[in-house]
Length: 447
Image (cartoon, rainbow, N blue to C red; front, side, top):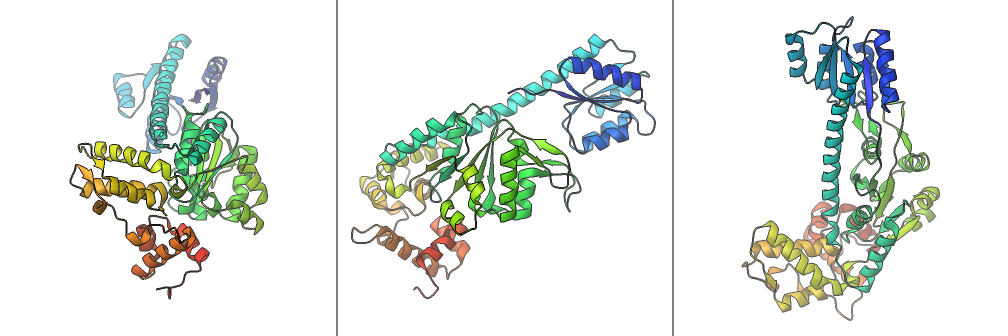
């Protein structure tokens, strides 16, 4: 998916503007013109250009001052200055201030075109490098999708089948089951894999912050908005946007999101320009969205727009056959990252892990192994190295819910019902803990 390189021509001479506009338009560039530095800066407040061709000698603000202003706006544009009054000092000053190069008037169209092509190549190299970084970051965790259990094999087959489509996906499952890894796997196996996967944790942001994060904002849109800022939908152009904890967004944001999904366009906060973006959306939730639709807290039309494909990630307690593989993977991962020699796990310790129900799922298992490697003797992980209390092991006479309720109540009472500390100890987020408290009707008197 290639895009047109954009050029802004800034010159007070109409004949120069017209000539450059026609030259570069014919060569396939997106071109706009401005007759003064002031107008150019105004255009740049709401739009970005890859290359700016600017005359140095103009009425009012000259090209050098405009160059400095553009750089202060943190714009990434490549700037080529043009002048009929070239001196060594002028050229050196322009280059010092950040210009890519300069040309003298009257210029040969072929020479200027060659210079612009060189600038375009530099832009392409920078973008290819960024895409490569994104690709590496996206792919490096895909191998974490480990599982031979029937439940996990079903998930992996779903990932493979939906990856090549552009359909919206909802990934459901408890906290810590690896929903983001599933999203990464879908993206990494799709035709969009060489473009960004942009993640947004919806539950961690207020409504106003989420709006700015998703759609971006214009300079001056609110206190602290000192620069124009791209939103996540804009960053995800040609790629994928991953919306985690989608069930937490407000009714207002549900309406905004529905509109973006329908039109693939949006307006930055404080702006008035419609911006288009070609993205695929993948969402994740640890809640039952269908129930939220039925009780009126989540829009039905948005639900059906998002839920084209649903992938449910099973909790670790339903895939105990995968625990030995996961343990082996995490041991290798942390021994490597800590520069420690390989260790093995003692059979009784592995057996205890296979009996444990892991309310925090894979995230909890990973934390246990990391901790064991840090505090262990460096050769073997023993039962004493694992932070598992016997009372937390599932009993054949006790239901999963009863055991989980008892475990959560014990932790809450231990920390005097401090939600933040209890959630940290349980290795879940605060929202999940609040939901569990509501589900089990727990109260501070449960001691």
